[in-house]
Image (tube, rainbow, N blue to C red; front, side, top):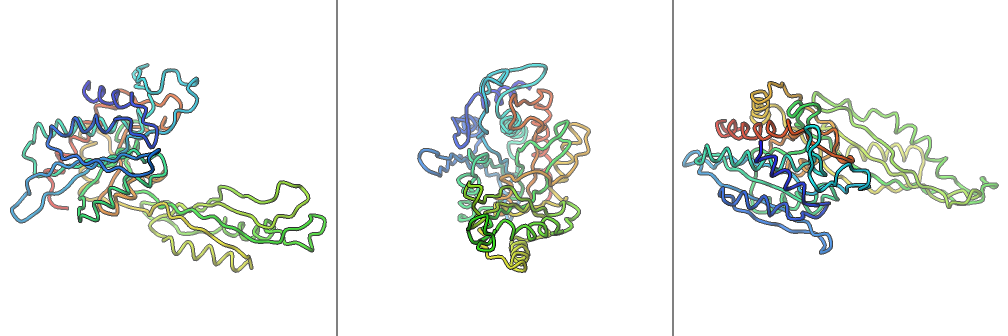
Length: 390
């Protein structure tokens, strides 16, 4: 346990608040290079918020003279969310501490323990299987908790330009509920946000016949949109949802009818819907209600799904062998960098420690969860190295 625990503590001690890496990748590269990994640092973003990304790869000998080696990638992030009020922490967030069998510190669960487990699992696997025909990669970023525009997506773009693809990827996001391995994510919903502006006519509130109140005008359309069944979901995904997050209207004066109202909303959508289809249906409702409007769309990520197959089966077997648990497949929760990786990798899952305290004051991981996580990753490497071509 000590090697994984000590590395997790070393990473937690770095104040890598997004988008800053604070030296975490240097620590990891120092462990990977002696194993034969070629490490490439890809930086992106403005000078005052420079994002540091790592693409590290240990290319194995092809399994046959005619076939290329399969590539498995560990993916994750070194950045963490801000600490919040320091006086509410029982111990300093970047000074890893132990209480009641728990390791406390910002990033303990999300996701520096996973990073440490990635590294030590790789060290142990390669010590036992130095001639493995499985190529292994690491794709790490310091821009996952922030805008996520200069991180994993940039590495994936660079790999695409080179014609490099992955066969399997595990993202170390904290996916478990009670015990490490009890839940994995084999997909994520897509996310699409919109900013709707409905135009009216500003006027005096005492003379409504001389104005057009856009809030009143849009209300029936909103009621209809709230009641729409966008799709029924499927075996892996819940139905698509539509939620309003903000409504902005008015001048601040109590006697002025506003000239416009701005509504922020978001779709979380399954593989049963497409961005274009959802956009069309929403705009048809607004048009039918006779509104003068404009919508600005941002697609934050497409849904992805890895059906049971080589990777899911190898992960399930590794979890069961290490913990005795029959893992649950899930696509719930928010987005992750898996949405970018899935564009160049056909099989992507997420697996990490319990997530009950992520982004909270006094974030922690149970020490008893650390070694099983590392062992699951090591068993996964063994399973994939022995598996046939997906």
